[in-house]
Image (cartoon, rainbow, N blue to C red; front, side, top):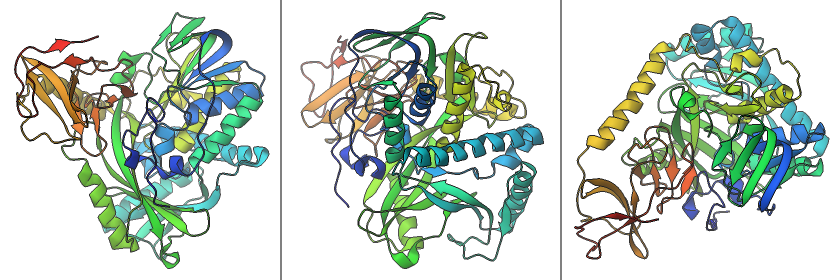
Length: 535
């Protein structure tokens, strides 16, 4: 406990961590992987792009049905967004059911609930059938309220969840944490060690014949069926392609207006036995506080406290997010010292429903899944079940709710407009903003966007001195911003993230930031002269 994990170089943990002190507990407490790399060209029935919960789960489902599958992961499997979650496996997701009824209708809420229950049941069954040791524990899920107004919202949510077929209960007499005076309780939910679970699913997939390849950074999906998936060491030809990259790397213009990314943060620390909360919890107020515990090897439990969400690339001091969570851990749980800090990224759809299924033309053989709104354990598993059924020609009665090609923003026009106005503001404002021309006060480990001969340049002061890359995101050209807590360049428009040297960490961007050669007279205090792009 408490040791600082070391992040290997390259794309080992591509997707989230750059700093060795920002690796999640899940990655730090489970073994690494040594799957092979892509060399040359392959042919397969289905290529799966992305080794998180969607990709690994769909690969296992298809392989066990006798389908020839190749899975391609840019870094190491289960080490991207899925490895940085709080790992709650629950159908109780805040106040989702009342929101779905308002934005859509009661039938949509009911079908959404059915799909989430199917995902939870699948996780339990898969763990049992394959004897995966992943600390799977049954827990009640609580959605908390601290005021009379919030209790009214929770009563509405409880009723909507019951109409959706869930056995929820409104409680006020329990010993609730965070000063809550009421909650929606849903028993029989689950939590697990997500990386141990996914490594077990991957092992089952490989055992059933799936080929898993790591360090295979996909940079293009070409054709209209069959497809050529181009990756670092070659290519994979496939009749069908499942894009499970969190933010889809296909149909980007379509998804760019319909999903918006947010970052959130987590801290973890050993908790005293008499302070362990009995259940999984999330509040409905602001700031968000989401928490659970996890068993530790050798005894005792770890408290995992998350929240503090914000739009990607739109916070001047992300370090304050960790500080706020640490204060909450001390105040509410008596935590002395925080041992882990990490952050993650979630995509939210404008109409409150994930996008899962066929993209492009009908029968195209191209599939994607995104927009789980912070609930990727059940949402991602549901997506895998649905896509596997679509590939197998099986009709799933709740598929229409998640149709990836739906065009309308029914019941969510205001949010559609708000989010896209925000993106436009970032695109325009980023280009028009004034920039410093020097690096006065830029200390080691810090980054800053500067103006160099009229060009926006992302400058980083590393241990070997100054390095520079273009500040224009390679997705749609928005100007990136410096993330102080994670030491990354983050795009405020669509959530792409880059390492200090410009390497892509998180899509939708597929290309690294272009390197910029600094003038020979560059110093730590002043830069002048002509900047040149370098290959």
